[in-house]
Length: 119
Image (cartoon, rainbow, N blue to C red; front, side):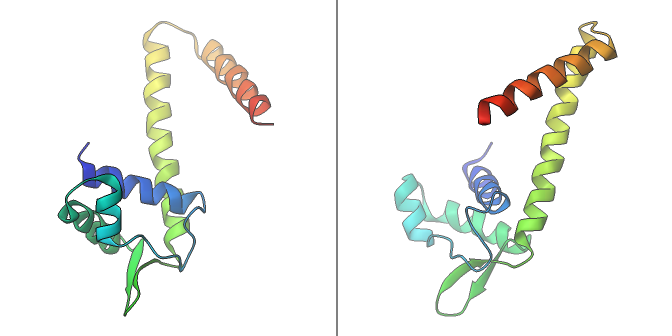
C-alpha cells in the first residue's frame, strides 16, 4: 500500500473512532512530513484525497479541519472494510471444509473471548 494511502487510512480510522473530531485540525503538511520522515508532497496528496472525499476541509488562515459529516462516513467505510475482511476469513474457513455451524460457533467463541479481554 502506498504511503499516501496509509495516511488516508489512518486519518479515516482516527476520525471513525473519535480521536479526531469534527473541527479538529489535522497536522500541517510540513509537520506530518517531518514526523513521518517523508516527502511533504506525499502528505499533500493524502490530504487532497481526504478533502476530495469530504473528510477534511480547508479553514481559511487555520489549516485543514475534520468536517462535520466525516465521522459517520468514516465509520461506514471502516465497517465496509471490516465486512470485506471478515468475508475473506469466512470464505477461507468454508473452503477448508468447516461446516457453517462450526464456523458460526468458532466466531461466537472468538468474539466472546475478545469481549472478555477488553473488559
